[in-house]
Amino acid sequence: MLEASGTGRWRTACRLYRDARRQARELLAPSPDQSARYESLRSRFALLYEEIRDIGGASEFVTPWWRRKSRSLEALLLPLPPPSIDYYYVRARPGPAALGRMLKLLEARFPPWKLKEVLRADLFCGGLNTDEEKRADPLLRAYLTNHLSLYHLHALAEFERLTGARLDENGGGAVVEWGGGFGNLAKIFTRAFGGTRTYVIVDLPASSCLQWLYLATMLGEDRVAVVKKKSSPLELGKINLVPIQYARSLRLRADLFISTLALDESSRAAWEFVLDKKYFGAGQVLLAYSQGDFSRRVRSAARAQGFQLFSSRSGPMLIALSKNPREAS
Image (cartoon, rainbow, N blue to C red; front, side, top):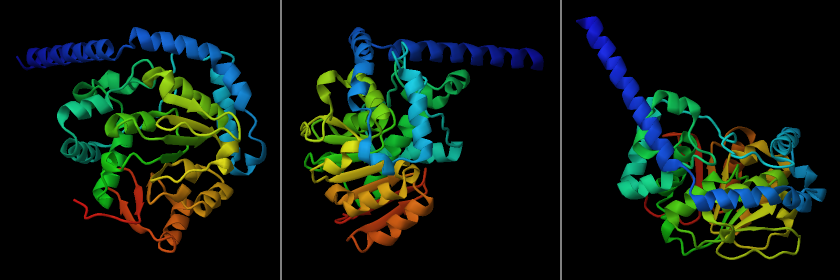
């Protein structure tokens, strides 16, 4: 009897897993519009990269590690990106206790329909982790998402909790992100807090092109602009992708500056540039997963720059700076 019961439970678990995976794939499959956009964009990828690949005088910002990373991206994406860019996904998984704390904060911040809408992964690009599919992860079943998107949205919600800010009540001011991965945080931010802001991502040219490919596929090419010349103006209300060689030419006053690990991985010259620019004038700063020398440099400079400093370990390490914090919840 016990053996039969155990076998029955195993069959039920396998059936639930198969149903969850099939449902996820059906719901997350790319729309015909996304598929058509991706095919059009990938055919122009090499031409765009050729236009912006020369980092010129910005080489001091780039570490040897990032040069190797850029070369690996070139190898993967040139001369033609593959049919899907699911390969570019950070496989990170919080433990059960941390996952519970993160979801508790998000479920208190957003109504259920909104949270599902924001976290929803894109199977076509940056979608579901293979390990998550094998386990029929509860997060996959509940929100059809991956852990990277959870990390990103949690960092934004935790920033709000610490500083008392409401990112959807920030007057539509500009956001600057230093190092944007494949564009997932920009997508999450746009879904969560509205898409009318001017959003700027500063990154290496290969990463800027990958962000263009991903974000233009997901959001539409009319929502994304690539800065191709030093004198090119930013396009208001869009996600502007700025190759690192044009960072010194940026002329804007941001409301919010974000970096998720990228500044830790950048050179000391990049740290000092961002600090000298006073985070592009931003009165609020979010540094997620930041630690080590750069974290110590930020903390030591915060008071002199007029910031109140907050830090959190309720999920991944986070530093928040605000010049005008409200009473946090």
